[in-house]
Length: 151
Image (cartoon, rainbow, N blue to C red; front, side, top):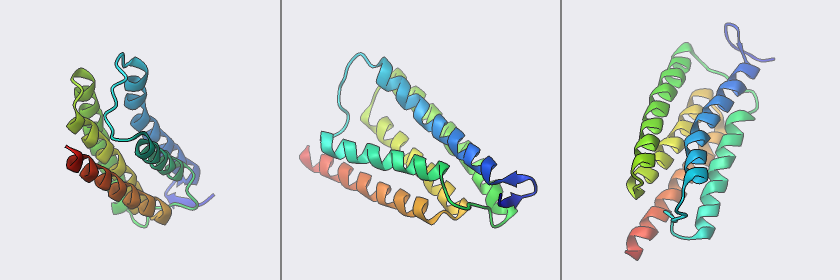
């Protein structure tokens, strides 16, 4: 095992990544399974499939990273408090969305989720997670720009 900080080891980091992934997927699953209307908030089914695939690849990279570690205690604290803050905002946005669905809230939740993965990648120095997060942000921004032009 790779020792990260004190007694925190690689397996602990993967558990943290798994917990973050569960917290990200839980509100989405509630919406999908409880939604009576199957109204599509996205533009095309192909692009939606690409975005879901990118999001799940971020989740896999977050859990199954090779040799992650914090370079300093400051990065660990940024990871800890940054994720707590972003996850809290993410949950509140989802609660707001479940009460009253809105395209802007859905987009905000997606971007917050991607930024959580980007934060994990930067603080744990997981280059594939940073690259995939950046690609996902750009791809989603392109999708949003296409949807704006269509209206």
